[in-house]
Amino acid sequence: MTAVRNIRMLTRYNKWANNMLLNAIAQLPPDEVSKKRAAAFGGMSYALAHMSIVDQIWRAHLLGIDHGFKSRTTDSPGSLSALTEKLNEMSDWYIQYADTMSEPLLNEKIGFSFVDGGAGEMTRGDILIHICNHRAFHRGHIGDMFYQSGYRPPSIDLPVYIRDAFNEAELG
View 1 (cartoon, rainbow, N blue to C red):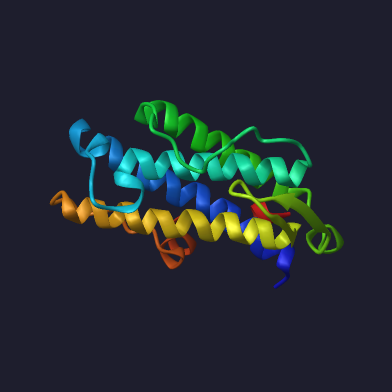
View 2 (tube, rainbow, N blue to C red; view 1 turned 135 degrees about the horizontal axis):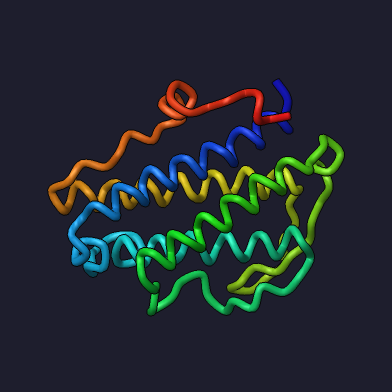
């Protein structure tokens, strides 16, 4: 088992877990999705928007381009369909990017500026792991919002993905 294999697997797991969660959210009454809550980022759609923004910020860092964001949050998260489209686009990008990685590339350090100021430096591998971890963290917040609404979130743990959807052959 190598870092390349694990990162490729994690990017695929994240797409699967996001899609499982997004499909479950789409089954909720619309007002539950947009409802303001005393929760992470103020509600489901706001947490999804934050995930999308952060995905775009880190993609820009990996590519060495300006992302244009002044904040990691938004007051206007957009529709669930628009958020779903953007999150899927980003998931596909991270899978394709991970598939181009080698051990030396994963260990290459990338310099960047944090949105709220200050310089940072991480390896490409650490950035990819962060993206996967970040999404999992906020899927947990959204899962809690399901329970607050009286609904049960989907089971999206890594072992469920490995059991139900993982295909080792996809990892190259």
